[in-house]
Length: 399
View 1 (cartoon, rainbow, N blue to C red):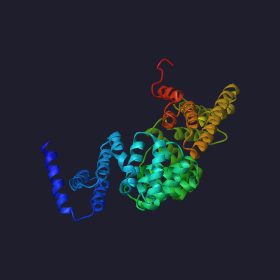
View 2 (cartoon, one colour; view 1 turned 45 degrees about the horizontal axis):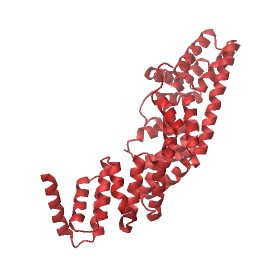
View 3 (cartoon, one colour; view 1 turned 180 degrees about the vertical axis):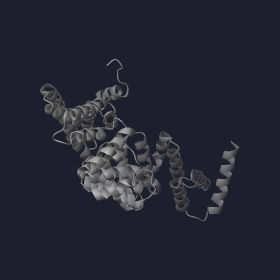
């Protein structure tokens, strides 16, 4: 209590000292302190505004910003209600309300109010950033990419919009476009938190597009793990360096014995010779059986197994795995088609529900949770989506 009285007294002193300053200057200083993470300074600015007996909506916005930083989302949204229609605070109140809705997973509401915020102030980085985040979390990648381009233009030193655009393009298998975005993210900052992951994802793109020399340069900057070792092994194999590829893939499997791409490449290397003898065939079979045990819903494993069983003269096993490979491949095509529909339509709960079902069939549990959650965010009263989400989060142990 004593601390609050001292804070109020200090606020009155600041108001007295700053009285010649326009209210807008004190308010702007409070917002700048908020953006820099100086919550105590923001509180002082709010108290100064209160002591100066100016319109209370200026103080409401600053205090709502503090609430948001402290995780008090509902309190923030409530404080902002009166500030939404007050011209001096309207833009910031809309932005903060959009942030509150986003953090409360009310993505549709966030999108609507953030669009209004941008109509009031198209130069706001935060408005475009939160709008991009809401679109992205709903799987609406087309509008997300557009908003991220605006964020990148307004914040020329920020690597994050390019990092996320790269991830979106990579998921779309637009590897050249993704590589451009990843390189720009890396150019903008040498120390951002996601830099190691960006390097790994850029390496994937360079491998997919056959840019092996550029890949070597990026891999030298990557942490050594099963993923990067496998990426290097695949590149060596593509350049005919079979022995080096085998050495690297063995290192990868030593670090992570069930790594999917490493197991698939190991089997390929074991069958590298068209004249592979029985021991080589048996070794490859053992590798692929490890792969299918760890990744039973991966169509590439079943495809390679079908080819190997056929080569070994086991038609029944070959047909079984060929059929499963086709089924899983068709599910992935369906997933891709649904994702394309969702990417341009942020308000269709049914598409997201179907994406959740398909992801679950493919064993992509995290994606299933994401898509069921997105369907519920758009349509809170969606009992089927809620039931499926619960099923994924807490599967029946008896099944």
